[in-house]
Image 1 (cartoon, rainbow, N blue to C red):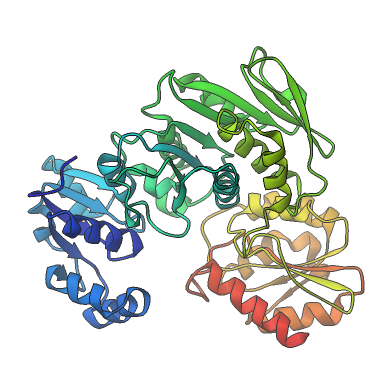
Image 2: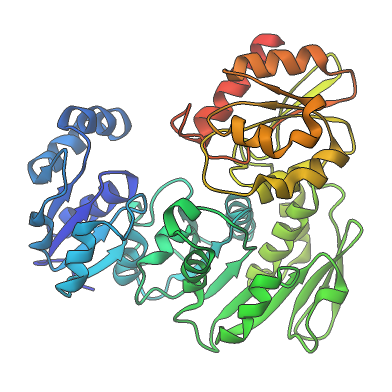
Length: 462
């Protein structure tokens, strides 16, 4: 798509909106940016992150404190993933047939055609999986960028120019809601569990957004699917691309698959397209838990046609380190391990975390309520957790849900109180795990901020 001469409305002045606006201005398009923050709040955020030159470049094209119909004076409306498509301005744009897209769709329309896209979505494990794929590709000598819901937006890179061989994208359900032409050469769906129901209003809408990742694929493209997930498998017949599967158990794999990987203890058993079988030992990786073995298997299937050297693959797996806030070991004090899993913002993530340790766990949970059923955690709490420390505005609901375990539960107004109480009660050889099952917005800017606060408190303890 040619940007020059076209008019773009940008709704939301967050990272993706700013990246898209700069890309448009650099390519001689016209832009109008709308944000609900005040002018001073926006100025402070942009200057602190990008510098004063970026603020001076964008400020003349902005409105603040509201979204107005001026956004509709555009050839295309680019919507921040943080804004619901139920918004009145977005609905007006759709009714007026103004092309309304996510920044991901805009990036796809302007990218250099020879760059391939590897896109990953799912309820959990996205960031680890895209980071591992990027790590493997770079070790194999490919020019790859990592973008989307992790790190920098897609349009922050020179994607319209030759030279980038792979765009490795982490995509949220919010980013996938407003795609039209976007097509991934390789698309991965890791898992599906209830998440963001406060935004999508139903599981059906959430699943529909996730399935958009396969929407425009055909037989020339690849879909990498979790055979253990019954929701994904119920949708598999609606996917038109070549399907390959990963599973924690060989018995879960569908018959007559062209390529698959399954787990056998710590060994990955990779059945390749040429009918050869490769076994990969994962005991020396730094990633904990069966869920991370699933992430590793999906990454291998994503790059299986690119990585011909098995030694490069094995070296990449052993050298890859866990991302911050994802089962990240912060410290060991007096024989007690402190684990930061602040990224665990839903119940499925917490299930994975609780099964990753063979030691008694002191669990710090709670935060911003997203409408999940916490009762699904009860069997895991009974079997793996010694004590539970609840924080945030979800603590009352959690306490009621877990009332059968009331002798193990305490509630706390602050993270510091929860950490100190857990440290006083934990014994040598036990784990203190922050794995909230909730978003962070009641007490913190984001899950990173929450994890950083946990880290700081632990380091002060040490």
